[in-house]
Length: 486
Image (cartoon, rainbow, N blue to C red):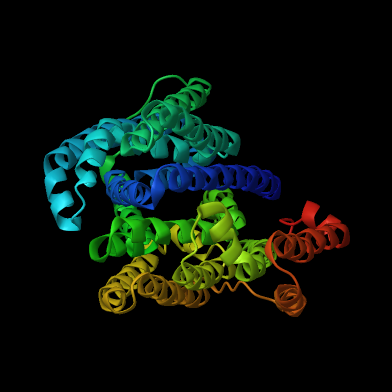
């Protein structure tokens, strides 16, 4: 257990840096797309990307998450041939299955255009199916590097190289092709391909340095016995995450999709730290669960949730008071309805943050079936509510449906964690943090009333983010250094 805190601490720092880089560069991509190409073209691209991402999750067959479960166990057993066999099996299987699915998408592209009543979707799928197998493969390779518990390769390839290249090529192709859907498509395709080549090189390095040569056959039945349940959780989880955009695309025009997607991206800024800890901790939770060490899992759960709250709460307060100005300045969105949508989506994202890595713990601790059931019900609730609310109140209905389904899913996850593992994320220290941050709301309200424009954004940023973080770093320097030695 001695190495666990050190790995988790380093992994979380790397993943936090990687997620910040990925989300910041990604946000710049979305800001540039909506400003250069317009909300309508941006909306069509996002709708196509979301549909393709959901299909890609299915195409990975849960093999990416099974890598997080099997690789740490095979390394612990020093089964090097079995480890190499497992990695090669999931790489080859997922790539060729991705080719099969890309062919199916290509021949059904007309049906997607008709279903969503968006002719440009056909063009999007014609381009995207070319790179689809590499899109699937890249995520598999990324999870393999995470399974080896060397987070820097995942951060470099997927969190930095891919979005950065997409940003660079977006500018380049805009100069070449102007305001066209092709501009966004080519930038995305090239960035995914280069990132997958880089990830392949990193995985090859891992396999070539294993102590034993050769490989042994790894049972597909054993892999799929685990990956099937992870697949259900994964597909429904991403469907839960993106149902709102799909349903907005079904019921509303491309511009509405673009506006809704922009507000959604802005709300996701809060979740940086939680994504980082989920990425770093999954292999560790798998090992601890395998050893039956629930006490250690509970300690790490409390610590990570507390720090997720510390990192997300200032951003939550900041965006509540400045969201309207940020949408106008950066996304060129002045629609009052968009700010209401942002407030609802901020609330749903914050709910996710304050429940910590509960989903990751359940998936990595032989409770994946139970968690899959909860996520499935949550996804169904989201779908039904979207059908009801969007025709009534538009994009606000999509945001409200997401909030209610997120609340059900993660509160149910906390109940499962307590019932089946006797773990709970909160203690007195957590409640103190929330109480201290609540005082910022009153201060920000005064600034909100007494200032306007850029000055308001600057003052609220200073009071809500800069000063609190400086105080926390100075006050709890030793705790930050030892934050996982609990």
